[in-house]
Image (cartoon, rainbow, N blue to C red):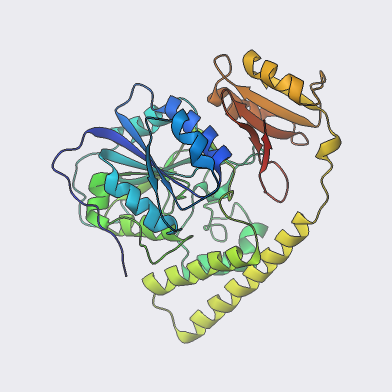
Length: 401
């Protein structure tokens, strides 16, 4: 195992280090960095981008736009865990934010999250592990409320540990049949309100706040996980060390979800293989239980791949729709000559234009209020493309300007 520990430094110069691992999503990353720049404005923060050998030309136009970013370019695709650990080795912040490049955060994101973490931190050292008593445990990781590019709440914003029973309910479909059941829906903590702060054993690596002191106790991401399940593993180790992970829905971010990975059988199989790897690492199961869980996981992988392939084959009709532009006047003026714009508020496609008079937070709130039948996309002032991900198959859309 090559689980990395957090190297101690004599002097830390930052409160927050934002670490983003990028792989071939330059236009999503561009919007992400614009939003992060605004979110950390006025704070003692640094931004680190680790590029996993994208080799797509994206860094050529991104580097001049974000000179404050510490760019680390890998000679090969090292995977999510190792690349994040490489960024962590260059970080100087007391608090670390691991963030996906296919996210958009509101302007008050960093202040609210940092304020909450500090408000519930009783001491720098955790007591003896006692998961049943979260009131005496300092915070481990912090996750926020996430929505996808259509405005739909992402259930993986908070999860329970995939114990044998929890995994069985998820794989058998009981979780989907009883999404709010305390007994059957613990995988996504469906019995807990999504608009309330509460402890959450597992948080998403797409937006994962954690203190450097906590990583010093547990180590960072386990590099034997190339991609997927590394967030479950780190969440588990944090709580096992006596920390409590928290779900914080007072902040909502957009996670376009999966833009860095193609939705094919190879990556779906890799996801479920990581689930098996996590289970072998942390749980001792009988041969029969291992066989049952393994069979269920591979069947689920095959079903997911089949459904994904079917969804991708659905022809698009949005090309014939007219577009309504909403938000910042400068952005509207920039896009109007380039797109088939409609004056109708009920056009089939809406683009939220983000700028001085329409913030990232405003765009996130507008996304949640929009008609579900209307597709959505985003344009931030100064960006090279319009981005979106509101199709049923979840694939992103990029309109290069």
